[in-house]
Image (cartoon, rainbow, N blue to C red; front, side, top):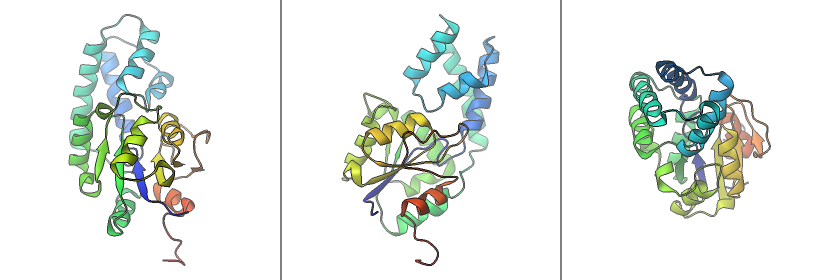
Amino acid sequence: MTFAAVIFDLDGTLIDTETLSMNSSRIAFEAHGLKVTDELLHSLIGKDKVAGSSILRAEYGDIDLPALFATWVEVARDHFETDIPLKPGTEELLGWLAERNMPRAICTSSSQAEADQKLRLTGLGRWIETVVTVDCVTNAKPHPEPYLEAARRLSATPASCLAFEDSETGAQAAFSAGMHVVQVPDIIPASGKFAHLVASNLLDGAHQAGLLPTPCES
């Protein structure tokens, strides 16, 4: 299959931030006297602030969410300033696409400020043409709007786009937008419900999707 553009999720797909984020969240919850389970933290993966707030209010009731989020952001910022590892194959795949002038975008549930910081610290910004953050849309993932906006910016039809995601929430957004979806699960195993392919890493997914040539074809 031939693709006109490639769109990537950021956290958990291109950069290995989900584990750091979970560690940061535990510290923040403990600072506010809240007990938190891995199950609850897993339920927040891929969610934007609005969806996450609903989950937290259902769990804890009327808590001071602005204060909790402020602590969470502060702890995460300290962690991210020192170390944001890339997922395996990130630089190789982005470099290969850039060499061939394949349109590339990021579609993330992070805020613009958060995404800018992560791209600056990792140096990935040089590979990406446009970034759609939660601040750019009315409806966040799992709604298809973020991916539809990314396709629009790249002047590509959704059906001609290949999307890489790690979470169920993100995969659902890309799938609902009508894109070909490769899911590379990070912390939580993929159900495959919203993916055309489930891969062990980015390069494996790119090969399976036909984006990258096999060694005998290169």
